[in-house]
Length: 269
Image 1 (tube, rainbow, N blue to C red):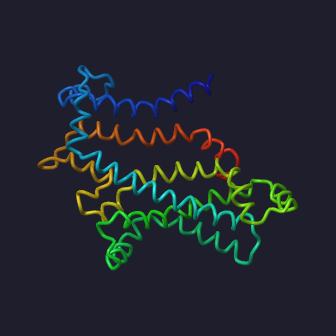
Image 2: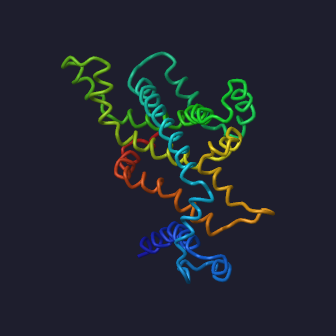
Image 3: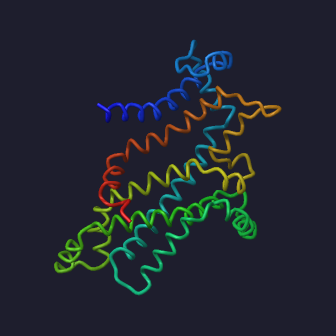
């Protein structure tokens, strides 16, 4: 009984903010301030979504964010898988040191590297370029991805590779035909975590992107800031609902592999 009660309270703390955000996105300003904690609007204003799409230029910014996210994920998955395979399955001198260096970079907050990163990007003419976001996102996302995938690949029995080697498989065949299909849960975990991180990233995008045509989705939300700092909250929350949908869809698509990855060794140290 206590477990059900705790799970119910925990579920409520997750669901209520989502439902509240959806409710505010369908209200008008008067209803929002009159009944701030209410979820159900007195009148459903579906036009908030169409106005938010137009005012905030959500379509253009979602296209930019989708391009940055997809390209970054492709590079992270390829580099992360190959590096993790070498660190988890091949014995060589300095392997533990390399893994330790990867893990140590996870301790660096992004705020520390913003200024030197900006100077480097300016010298390389990457300011106001989507590649100015993609390259740092790859570098920042690789350490945690390699850490997760290395732990996952270590949990796969080595006897599988030994049997395939006896049957004549070379190293490339072991990587792509034996280990890659078994690595889908671990890769799904990496994809979901990195997708959410890149999709919601703000500080680096704020520094690198100045051109309104290249704004990502987090920067586009500032379009709802009006004169004297006043915010159009209803349209802002409608935009938030729109931008949250791809994250929810990604989790629904990969949820089985994500849970499998978490439970089969992706988070084992």
